[in-house]
Image 1 (cartoon, rainbow, N blue to C red):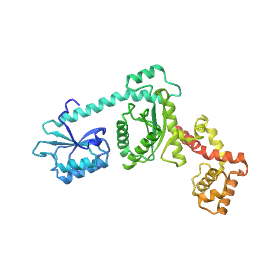
Image 2 (cartoon, one colour):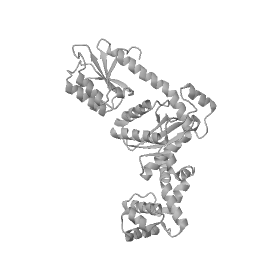
Image 3 (cartoon, rainbow, N blue to C red):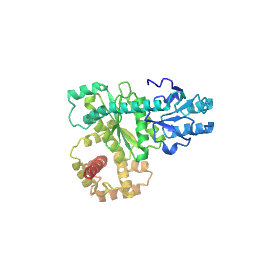
Image 4 (tube, rainbow, N blue to C red):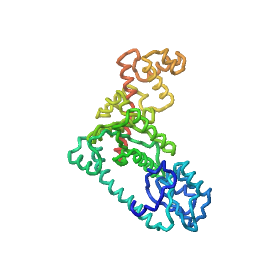
Amino acid sequence: MPGLEALQLRAGLASANNVVRWPYVAENHDLEPWLSGGELIFVTGITWQWQLDDYYQLIEIAEKKAASGIVVLTGSALIHVIPEPVLARADKLAVPLLEQPFSLPMVRVTELISNAIIQADMALHSLRWLLLQLINSSTPPAQLTLMRAEELGVQVSQSMTVAVVNPISIDAAQLHRWQYSLNKFLALSDAAIPLLEFHQGWLLVVENEHKSDHEQSEMWSELLRQLESQGLACHIGVSQCHSLEELNIAAKQARQAVEFIHYQNSARVIHYADLGINQLFAEVEDREKLRQFCQRTLGPLFACYSQEFLLLKNTLLVYFEQLGSARKTALVLNIHRNTLTKRLKKIETLTACSLQNSQARLCLHNALVMEALALSSLDNRGQDENN
């Protein structure tokens, strides 16, 4: 940045692409309660006599709280140089550590950084608005919309992977850390499309022209691992599109995938392409019909989370996966054949469906599969009523 050429990156090169959310001047060494992620921490030495252990503690806190990096002012009687062991510790934990000459006024540095952050946010505001209009539209975008997107730096004709990240739980104290971590992921992926808020979570879009299916899957699994290492638990639904014109469809598919994870208790990352027959159910516009079918077919088992009924539904799924073989089902579940027989009879009683009838088996299997979508329609309807 013009005006900050005197700053030098001394350690933590591996995390040099960290996103700076805001500058923060440290007045003591115990900053953990005040950091929420993305801060660039400035150490002046004016209000605290910094010792090696203080530096170590600060670096560990910065790594733990996902701070962007640390800037140490040197060349004064307060802090003459950055000790070599401190640089080594920053390298080890991949925390960027920069050196700023004391002669460079702090007020000038923080002003330049703050203005740059504000200007970048303003520049992204128009693009975010345009993309959200495009994503939430049920019709293909107009040519003028696509032209405007290109003017704002987005390539219209490119293959993209789209992911919906839904936190399992979140509080206000974690919000900045979520946004910082996701923005950092996008920066490392050279994404042209910024982070977007989307249906109780975020939408991420990255180019995938040069990535195989395995590389794409591993990319989102790695993001999940990074978030979990910071105590940020989530579900990730993934889809893809071949141009910006299809972004609204891909976003809808990724959302359906993440809803499937939530209600089916399946893997924490899932691609829309792996939903199988659920893709067809997801395209049914009248979700009330799905709900009615599931409720009519499953009876008391529908939308019930008691231990007994969850056990029965899991038993039924395994029974279908084993093509109706009682012997194989009992083996997979590690239960006696008599126990299995009692469970299956209980299911028949509750659902009023005979497992000896092929149509009844087909209806039960489909109802179990589409239950997640039916339940998501109930949740969405409840949210709409509350709004």
